[in-house]
Length: 119
Image (cartoon, rainbow, N blue to C red; front, side, top):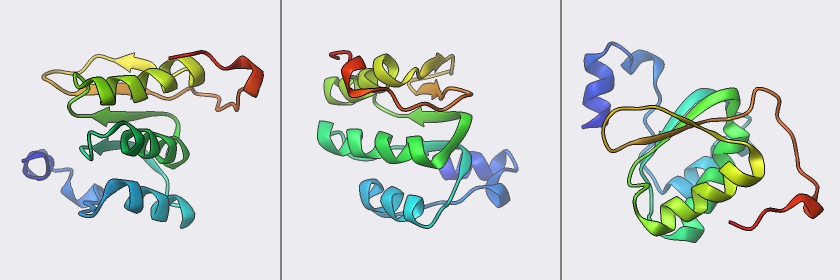
């Protein structure tokens, strides 16, 4: 459905559809040096897999880019996302429907381990 919407909007040629486990695909893409301005992920809803997805998306998305997630109402997804909001400065982006979006900081940073904020 999302892929059809992108094609209808004329964005299909500028978009890469990856159909495999997101936690594996994102790690592979990061290792290959792939970067993007935005990403939409609708992967697993298990906390540990969502956390891994967001970890690799942080490496893949250019500073100031947008990450779009589905099903952030699930506690496991919301909790993983809250870590990145509180500890890495991700900011909510208004988006229609049931999707949730975050903008990554314009200036990437790596917080000290002593700056950890419980989530």
